[in-house]
Length: 220
Image (tube, rainbow, N blue to C red):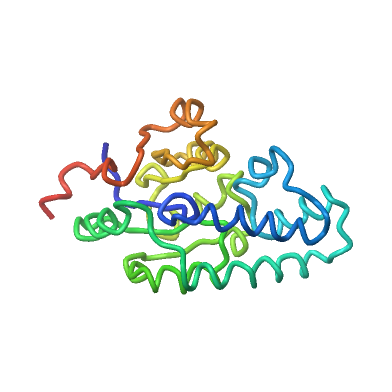
């Protein structure tokens, strides 16, 4: 396996943050008299922030405007990402190894910059990345290959020269469709899709301790 660029998802991949969104869903919906329905997390996985709000508003017939929903989620999430969310096991060490090996690094995420920037800066890895691509800015969620294509091109590379790391099935499918090498990453909330993710991805890891290095880059 060889690659010149690496494209990373954040939530559930290099950030141990999925429980944050579980709590936000519970609190947001309980205030409006609803419980989180079965299949909700699966339905919104890979969607952009705004698309998730559109889906949620329609599903529960909420009177809130889309802008009001996203603003409330942002306020709830800001505290957690600024103060509590940490990196997943082995993520920092792996990013540093790739950077030293000359691999170009990008983020491709459904998170907004307002959330990702303070979190990655506090965790000490923001400066390792060469570029950041959000679903909001690209105008496409991770259920489409567009975000991954934009990330590869933003690194000045072709899609086949990049590896994508992601934990959710829609994103794994999209990255593969875009032509990137794909590494599925274990995350407990996506464990029910593990078999399908493994069947699509080129490699599957339980943590970044198992993540691949490109051929011959260790000598650079």
